[in-house]
Image 1 (spheres, helix red, strand yellow):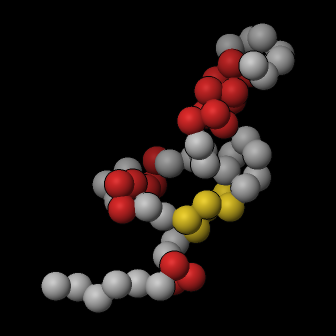
Image 2 (cartoon, rainbow, N blue to C red):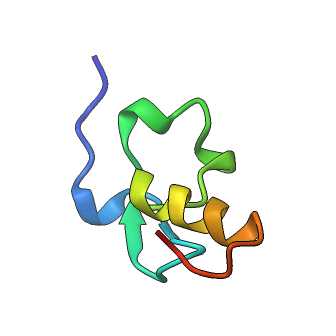
Length: 57
């Protein structure tokens, strides 16, 4: 059994949309290199801006 890591020792990233720093989660272990957004709200808002609306919903 592996030892638990302290939360301060986990990898961190910055959200592309809002700039918030978020920490690695176990469920993201397989896809950590592809994670860009801190939440579903940021991901969907970023997609609506890119679609040409010009306004985040």
